[in-house]
Image (cartoon, rainbow, N blue to C red; front, side, top):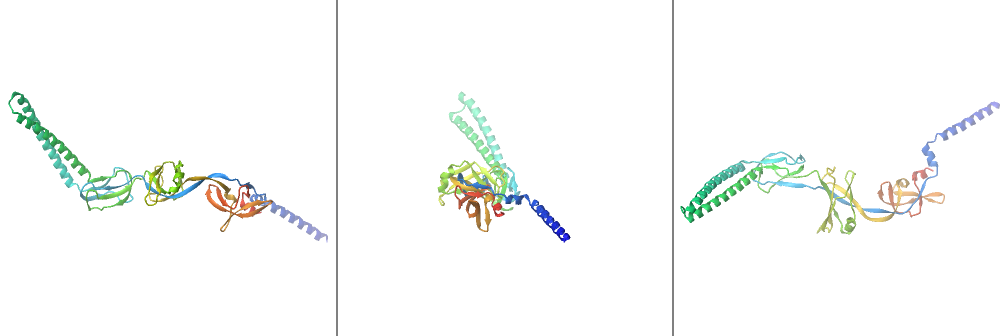
Length: 346
């Protein structure tokens, strides 16, 4: 009988020890859940309201180079998607005809200069003899006219030489600026004529975002010193270099806006972006993200009423950093739990 009593006493002591060890081993987070949840009294504050529109990234500099002389393409130095430095030779055109024209222009200039030298010498001789009465007035006038004519012939020959040199230079097409080629309109061996498109490209240094602004938001937009761009990769860029067109489009009755991006920005021409700016200031209620609990399609918070918390559905607006805008479901002065999961764990 005594042995049974001793066994029961030892068993009771072991159970108490185990229970004490189990309670002491509870994690700190569980102890926090057991504590009284922290709350916050909601207060309406004035916050900016943003308007988000679609924008397209485009290069500031883009061009299509065209042929300025006739000939057959003999060499293409770059292809589509190649990066081209400024001043690089893009392609070459046959230059035999242009070279022959240059030689002819040089010969014409030499001839004109020789004739002019002889005419000026003749004018000098006649001018010396005319006061002595050795030559007639008619001969004097002829010498003056011929000297002036040969001077003009030299000027015309120099212009022809310049034109011939330029025509020869046109057989090599150079890049007007550094960038990337986007299109090739000709092939090697193809004959081209003046004005025919050859290659297209854009400058990769300067980019901008372009979007259409509806008329009802033009007044609000004019009051913005800068806009925010969200790129396709999620990164954001702020820019204060904004250009609003002074005229509206005939089709959509909206005005175009250009937003300059920082130099060498990591953007792709033709890609989409989101542009955001402040459209108005409005009083709002905001709650921290930790106060929200999501159950399937239900967004709710724990609203404190007396000594209890009541799960209350809310309708949310835009996300602003670590806070959420409340559109309906709560009112100013309501008290909510700051950590919804702490209330759930109670």
